[in-house]
Image 1 (cartoon, rainbow, N blue to C red):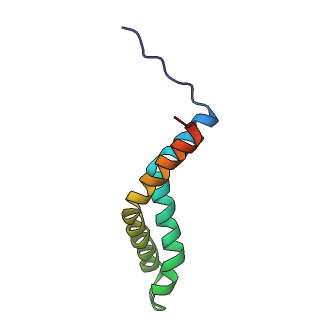
Image 2: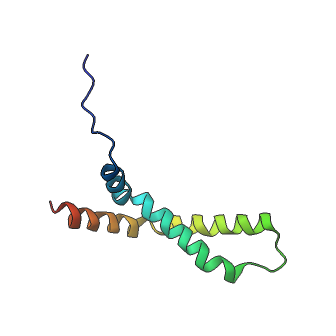
Image 3: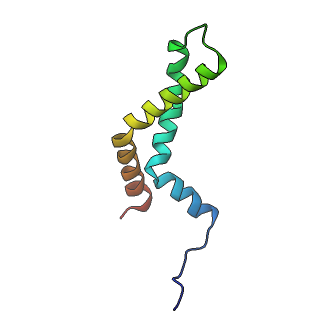
Length: 84
């Protein structure tokens, strides 16, 4: 039995995979939302652990909300870069 031909793992391949993966944009949006919005809702008396949990919760909400926009961004990038 022959092994299937695999594409070599090059830096360009990794970069294109990251750009065309919708979860990249979802994670980026979640982290950005956590960094932008959490300081406004963070209570002053909350400890370090509670603050970390709040940041993670806001990041998860941002990740969940960005599903459709991430798919749109990925589709547009594929059309722009690959032009097929």
